[in-house]
Image 1 (spheres, rainbow, N blue to C red):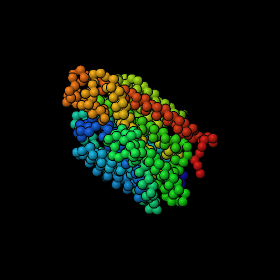
Image 2: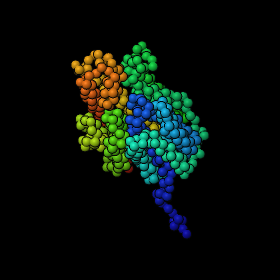
Image 3: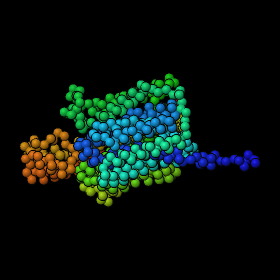
Length: 547
């Protein structure tokens, strides 16, 4: 038989790669995303179980994102040094252990510790996913696998709201996380079908870079998470310390930003001397790549803020069930899922720059619309329309900016791209959740105090019997229970309920408008995304990667 008869085109050979490894990779993404998406759905149940305010539960979300963002670059180097498949397998075991602690945690402190442990394992899993795709697939299969990874994240969010809503309503929030114990065990078994990379023992881990990056991200996350509790400017009584009367929260943020700049300077210096940096700065060395990072941070922060705001309002304010949250958020999550999958069909018609701009415009329109139409019923069709419009923009943007980063860097930097993606997304998730909580509680406090002061019914004598220094989101039933322990008359109780209802809604509307403002601002960096379609040569006038 001739050599020509045995010839198989490379594209056909690529298609012969089994998709079983991709199942393990996709499930690795899904267990992380399912965990994070389940926390807002379980918000009401956890508040009741642990008897804590909703912002304490939000700290669990922040702890997860903070640990992932702080150590994902270290995770990328561990993948390079010891091999992605081996490190992925070990991290899945740690993730399983964190879910066991999460499922049986008796206190809020242990719940937060479980999420921190979960974040530590995810900091290794996140960069391994891109590296595993690069190792197991080539050509068209690799492009398909990258798209599937984005869809897996969205699909996990949908499943978390469905499963979390049903179980949380009829059984409780703990079985939701119990499912992840079995799921992570399945991922561990499937991981043995992955190609084993022997790793590169010559890769050195930059300990100074790890400390600088982790400290910067932890300080920024802690600062944003405690803005309301410790004080936006001057320190409150809840602050652990003060610096000349100033709150430690903004100080943490400023110091974190300074340490972040120090990390970049240290990394560039280390790279110039020929030593292995914690993050290869080539992945953010062009204006287009930095624009993609800014856009990714903004859209993920907006998603995290909305995913915290809606369950907060439905479960804590309205006192409704987790399944009501799932139903209310289902149009949004389904829209994100399908937009993430279908946006790739427009890549041949629209440039990344156009998609980025249109995506943020849609996000802003959806949020402004929500601010004007939302009342006390999240199932009304105008509210659903706003969530769908926001979902189209959000789903399109997440897939777009990830593809820009992946396609702009060579295969050997796949782990660094994964680390950058993990750092950006999880820091954005932590900051978005923290800011949403601090912003809404701060707005609620400001509006409520102003209306209480303007109400002749709510006398200073009654105000003295209620703690107005720690106003938080509570249902009207909870407020009536608190007022039952005071000297309030039925008329005063009714007036307090009216003030509480109006203040909550006003805080929500202002919060949504501020989120829309962030979406509009991000149109500017979106204008720096690549202005050419796949297959076209870049415009020579565009700023290219520095050499």
